Image (cartoon, rainbow, N blue to C red; front, side, top):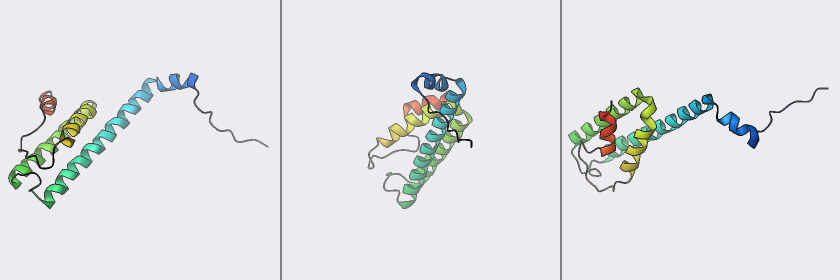
Length: 122
């Protein structure tokens, strides 16, 4: 009778060799970028949903809000076309956006300085 074999757990000695292979690093970078893309998309959905409920939250007219949505979409398309810079750009943008006060007014072209640098680098 043959016994079932289970994969051996990674030990400290062979974990480094497994984790240091180039394929595992590429896989980790892809997973990280996909997670940041998901977070950026959730932020954009929050912006759209909250703007549909009321425009008083942003203290801006619907036209300016529409322009701001276009800027967000173009930002996402630019980042998706340059996949390797996505995690850095969305991290910076979401960090700055999350620290805003809800009553602080914004304009249609109020983007953080780091975001402007990233967009100008394309």
